[in-house]
Amino acid sequence: MTTGAVEVRELEDAELPEAFEVVRQLRGHLSPEEFLRRVAAQRLCGYRAYGVRSEGRLVGFVGFRPVATLARGDHLHVDDLVVDRAFRGHGIGTALLAHAEAWAEDRGLEAAFLDSRSDALGFYSALAYEPHTAVLVRKRLRAT
Image 1 (cartoon, one colour):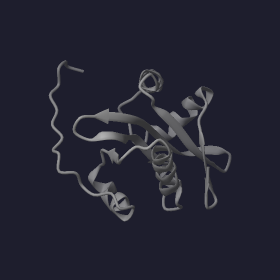
Image 2 (cartoon, one colour):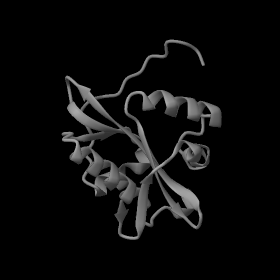
Image 3 (tube, helix red, strand yellow):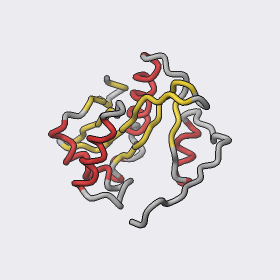
Image 4 (cartoon, one colour):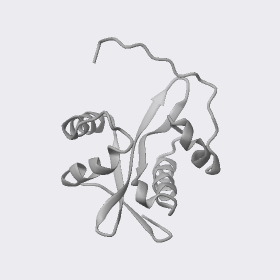
């Protein structure tokens, strides 16, 4: 899919190590091996990985999956959205998110959900995302 001058395409397995170089800017706690393991595990649940290239390298990444829950119905969950720092502000993140939303709409999904860092809320707000009323809580079940 091409949005303006930005071409978004599904990534092949062989491109995932390169994608990690961008994803690590969002998920700094992951090693390259753990990233590949988690992507493989999530693919069993429908996870899709798409990217954008510029200047001969991968500069943007989105990973998402369809989810069905009692509370939210059939929806899209955007797990990962990251653009290389040097390429932010050029419409790449917007194109990646628009691609994920179009993918979801084509499959009849009712909404899109994602977790966001507070410093990215302005970006999402400009794209009509609103804070959800649910409060995220967590309990560690084992030490890391």
